[in-house]
Image 1: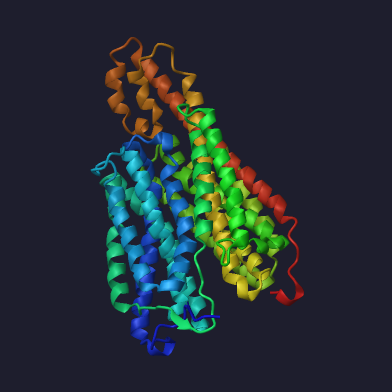
Image 2 (image 1 turned 180 degrees about the horizontal axis):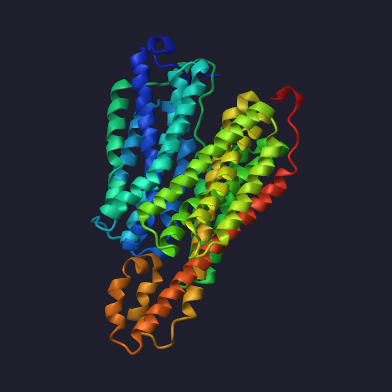
Length: 537
C-alpha cells in the first residue's frame, strides 16, 4: 500500500510540548468560538420573530432556521474529514470568520445591495452561517482531543457542554432585550465581538495541527457522492414540504420536487453502500438498538426544534409579550433542558437503567408538548412555566441516554462514526420538522383568518394580515385606514381576533404534532433490549 496521510500530532508538537499557558489560551479560544456559535443561535430565538415581521416574511417563517440547520448538517461531516486531511487551524479560523461575517450580514438583511428581497437575503445568509456553525461544532470538540491527553478530555468536553448551556440560558433573554431596546439588527451584531475575540486568541495560541504522511496507511477520502446526493435528497424535500402551504405553487410542481427527492434518496443509499468512507455507515443499523435510537434522534430533532422556534412565536404573537419576556421564558426552558441532562446523566451512571430513562423521558416530553398544545391567550405565566419545564426535562433526559445506548451497542473502533450518525439524524429531523411545521402554520392561520374577512373587503386593508407578527406590532398604524370605511373599527377588531385565533390554532396543532411524534418515540423505547453482558455499566 502506498504512503498516505493520516492525522496525528503536528511535527514537533505533542501534549508534553505545549505549555500549560498556551494550552489554556487555546482552550479559551475554543470556548469563545463555541460560545459565539451557540449565542448566535440563542439570540436568534428571540430576535427572529421581530426580524421576520420587519422583512414581511411570515409566509417563510421557518426558512431561516431550516436553512441554517440544513447547511450545518452537511458541514459537520465534511469539515471533520477536511480537518483530518488538511489540518484544523486554518479551517477553524475560516469557519469562525464565516460565522462572524454572517452575523453582520444577518443584521443588514433587507439593506444588502443584492437583487433579493429582505427575507430572501436573511434566508441565504443564515445558510452561509450554518456552514460556519457546523464547522465550528465539528472542530471544537475534536480540538479537545488534540490539546489534552485522554485523562483530561472528559473534563474539557464537559466545559464545552457547559458553555453551550450558558449561551442558551442567557442568549434568548439578551437577544430579546437588545431587540426591544434597539432593534433586531443589533441583536445579531452584538454577537460579532465574541467571534473577533475568538479569532485573535486562536490565531496566536492554537498549534497548527496538520497531518503527517505515514507509510502503509490508507488516506481518508471525502464522500463527495454522498454529499451531493444528500443535498439532492434534502433540498427538494424541504422545498416541497414548505411550499405545500403556498397557493402559488401547483401540485404538479410539488410532486416533481418529491419525485426528485425520492430519486436522490435512492442514489444516496447506493452511494453510501459503495463508499470507501461513507457519511453514513449503513451496516450499523443492523443493530436493533442503534436503529431504534437513530429513529428516536430523528423524532427528537423534530420536536425539540419545533419548541425552540415556535415557543417564542406563541409568547410574542399570542400572549403579546415583549421579545425580552419571550427570551426569559425560553431561558427557563433551556435551564430545564440542562437540568434534564444532569439528572439523566447522573441516574444513568449510577443505575445503568437506560430503558427506564428512555421511556420516562419520552413520556415527559409527550406530556409537556400536549400541555403546550392546550394553551391559549389566557394561559397564566405559572402554567406556561410548568409546561416548558416538563418538556425541557423530558428532552434533556433523552439526549445523554440515547447517546449512551448507541455507544453501548457500538464497537470501540466505530464509536465516532456511530455518534456522528446520531447528530446527523437529530439535525435532519429538525430541518424536516421545521419545514413541515411552517406549512402547518401558514395553512391553519389563513384558514381561520379567511372565515372572518367579509367579501368585498379591499385588499389594501387585508394585506397586513398576511403577516400576524408584523400585524400585532403595527396595529396602531392600521386604525387610520379602517376608520375611513363604514364600521371600520368593528371590522378591524374582528380581523385582529381572527388573526390571533388563527395563529393560536396553528401553534396548538404544531405542539400537538410534536407530542404525537414523542408518543411514537415512547412506543419504540418499549422495545429496547438490554445491553450485552460485556458492556454493562
